[in-house]
Length: 277
Image 1 (spheres, rainbow, N blue to C red):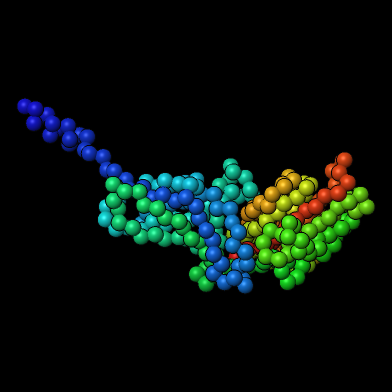
Image 2: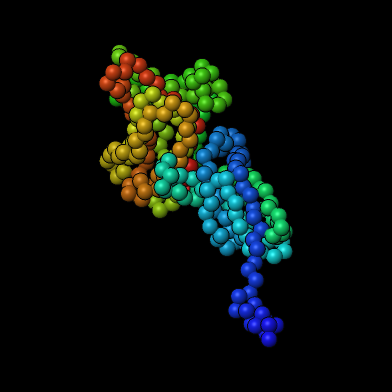
């Protein structure tokens, strides 16, 4: 009698499968073509995990990803970022390649893996890169403020490499405004991002100047608070490309001394515009 009851219970409540756990402490980025992609600084905060191309979920790093599987299979990992630097707008970054990892499921073990992402190149048609690291030149020119970006090689003012961009404010020059000399042709309804490393003693704004159908307009992109340590941010430009279709875009940095300040600095490095054309 007991054996009949026991068998029926197992049919109703079969034994639960035990997952294999993939441990992901951190991620890294490498430049597929260094001269094209420039710096590999990143702020990958999450991974979107797929097993054999089926979505498992999005996981904040460091992550412990449960995979219900048997035998050999493949984990696909997509890099996740904070869109526009906001933790509430987590998304997949479209310009990093997918990291793939083959493993044999073993529910008795946890398997460690560190994804290595690369920038998209020949695998994606039409992807365009622009990078200003201030190592060779300076894409920014004065606009309407008292001062603009100049190059600095003072070690404490440089994020990486030998040079960064510096905008210095003082009581004699209390405002700063700089615009890119290069125009960018962002394509409507296709991904476009700005990448940037920055630190600043003052809040600053990034704006865009668009030349479209014989008219020039200016639109705000983002405002930033002062930050006393170098910070990486990914700024989503896709909406601007859709709103100002087939416009020619330049980008503006604008700042000013706060009340009570006699001097301040804004530093930037690795200014990138990445988009599909």
